[in-house]
Length: 220
Image (cartoon, rainbow, N blue to C red; front, side):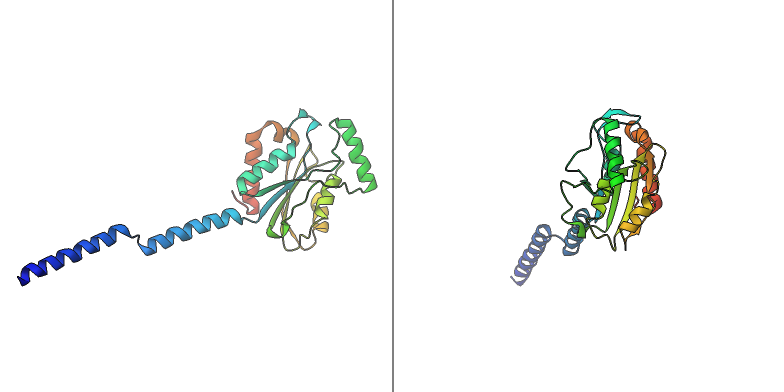
């Protein structure tokens, strides 16, 4: 009788252990999966990178009438490669679609050292540690609306990274100007590409952006 009772108790114990084993996760494994997912979600939510840019559609030099600006093309690629947030600098008073009229207005704004008003702002600028700033080169300089943007925020302690589209002038003297405006920021080497290439050769543009990001340590 004792043997039968002992056997029954042993069988019941084994059954109970098996049921517990099949119905519960390993706590260490569950914790690891949770932590990993939290890290991924945290990285996605808090990458701390912003790509801010000004770009113009309409009639552009050497590329005709375009629906997506040259600088906008580059901004999109940087955003895709870095997982950054994207902000377009949009003036309250748009620049003319006609190329000659736009050049005339750009020259007038530069002569007057104007600060064109921007239609919206970056509400959470403090949350970004790295800010890419993109623009076409107009009259050998940044468009004046980009000056408006840069002077609207405190960039001290941030990393600022310029990029531009142009037709042979590179970044001109804009890196120095950005360094002066963004006092206290670390300004990295910028990226420059011809607008015609950005508009018409996606492969070459993407390759150039990728190599540049790797060089400055913001690798894709």
